[in-house]
Length: 216
DNA sequence: CACCAGGCAAGTA
DNA sequence: TACTTGCATGGT
Image (cartoon, rainbow, N blue to C red):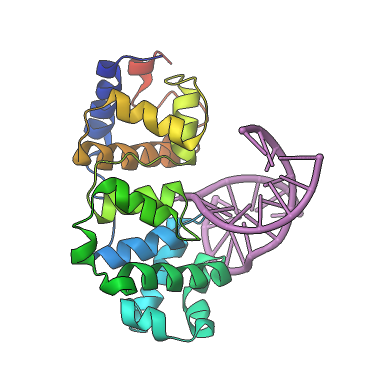
């Protein structure tokens, strides 16, 4: 196990080593929501191609996503993979979040976080990670996002040895950190950056900036 | 060639 | 509840 102070120190070390990650890339809430769906089990590089295609075709807006024939949408987002599922999910999610009961981004921002999370999770195609990514990065709510990297990170470094389920890992972070949107934003992005650039490419932990922090 | 990527839903035991 | 499988492209 680990103390709250140690967890904060790890964050500070990562931030000092790598700098701000500036997540989430995307200029609007809609773009972030679309990206969150397209990046499901998919590299961000491929998502960028898909989003770039959507922009080029003038499809990256709520009205067009709903009105465009699904076959066309599939073709446009094809580089991000799972295009049949994802085109369907995009249409469903956008129609629910932007049209149902005259919802709009401004109206959605009025809902409290718990209500919004339930709303998102009840949409077919949105699981816990996608929901929390949207809450944190599109709606700026202090919700900690857990992904495969996060689970590997806490397990490999023995920060948390409890149940490996999504909710449990999330609870570990949220109980041991101040509930702060900026902190959650940066921490998640830094864990992803660390895992992508050090924990895989460098076999040993010799170059890991957390070396002394974690006694490895 | 195999394996992975910023998951999720549906099916099985 | 816990595990398995399909979904699909592009990079290593």
